[in-house]
Image 1 (cartoon, rainbow, N blue to C red):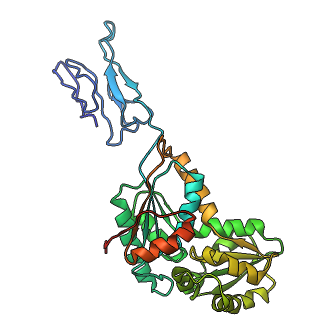
Image 2 (image 1 turned 90 degrees about the vertical axis):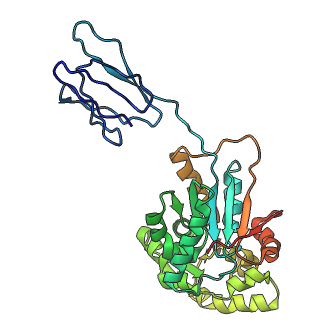
Length: 347
């Protein structure tokens, strides 16, 4: 920022701006800039308002006016940068967040993604709130080492419990999966009866109910399905055992005549075939992955942070345990081959 310049009388003064402007000697001008450079300039002890100075702006003094013997300072804007090739960070308790990665890749093909699956501590849904917050902070700190420009919490449990803590602690935009899914459910329901399934912690938090009730008067019928995550992680997606478990969990919701079902966990889309078979074609199934991708695109565009690269981005995948299992099952979530994943111990 510019150093303060003092003036008055016939004293000699030196102006030494740090933003690159030339120094001005023997000037009666008094100029003071606030630390943020926002409208605190004073000329001859008279305050004037000026627009904010960009980080790349330069202050250039004009030639002295022979009549007034005053140096007038002009502001010249530096070039604006409307692209940001830093990666997007996404984390989940396991492989489920790859459903979000898949949609972000479709929506924003030029963006590089760094993904962290906390497979050593899955599932989050059975953990205490304090533990979930701690895990989420540690995951976000790991992603920050890659200088990510935005973080997606691709875990419904973490989104329902830790989102506020993360936003308070980290300066980058942080997007959860609850709100986009809730809004989509309200949009597609026809009879106003919305079913929500998720981990015990997500359901207990009533996060989806709160979001839905903020924008509608629809009825919400919730149900915890704790076995769905291990079924998805193990790749038990079909078969008699899986179908029997799905029917057991969903029967109370079907008895309430729901017409929309929110998959309140990013692992659940992998069980979509069994879920669809159970609820029937008249029930709309909502997963928030595509809505989250649209939200990410909107935030980046609004903040002029969209990537601009000619080459296909190289995505990076990290897990805290069971690399081979992550690659095997994760490819089903992602819909494409995962060529490499690395094990990390960031906790």
